[in-house]
Image 1 (cartoon, rainbow, N blue to C red):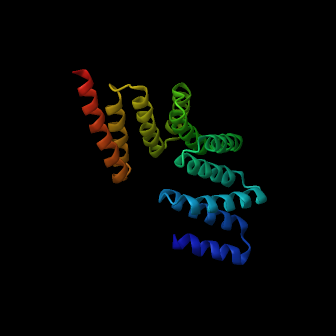
Image 2 (cartoon, rainbow, N blue to C red):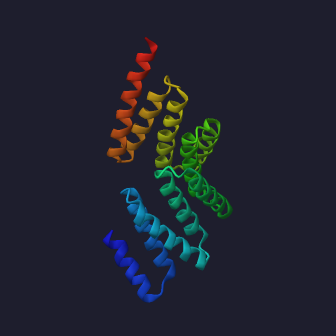
Image 3 (cartoon, rainbow, N blue to C red):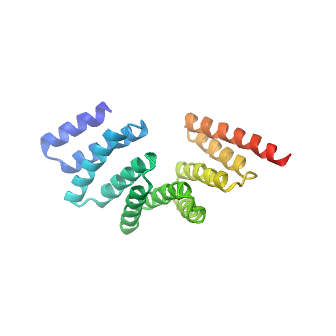
Length: 199
């Protein structure tokens, strides 16, 4: 966090608007990861304005996706849908495949909350295809995590434990123990539920 504040201050001093925007978005990402949604929203909005001013569409798409994530975390689903769709459209326009896959993944999570499971499935499948094609293992892990939630919401209890387990394995390989542990715990809980339903 101090790094981004220092970078922001320096960028503002020398009039580097791209550096300023990148620093603001970095602060937004950190606050979002900490679930500090109010400051995150402020930083993303300021970054978005600067990116639009200087014509940086990659930064604009990433900021829009960040704002969508904030709305999703607040269960403000319609604004989140708008932000994610705008970010997706921009990512596709500029050929940012990772950004496109991240948007599809977030849209899948959102559609699960809206209980549009067919649309969620389509979003997740597109995310999986892109993550796999570009070799993003972290993306694949995040897809598996989301897809497990879709399976659970659909009552597909036979497949849920394995999907959580596959996500846990990938997170372990990537050196992300907290995410791995969370997925393992969900896999165990899903296995218990599966066995209870089989009786």
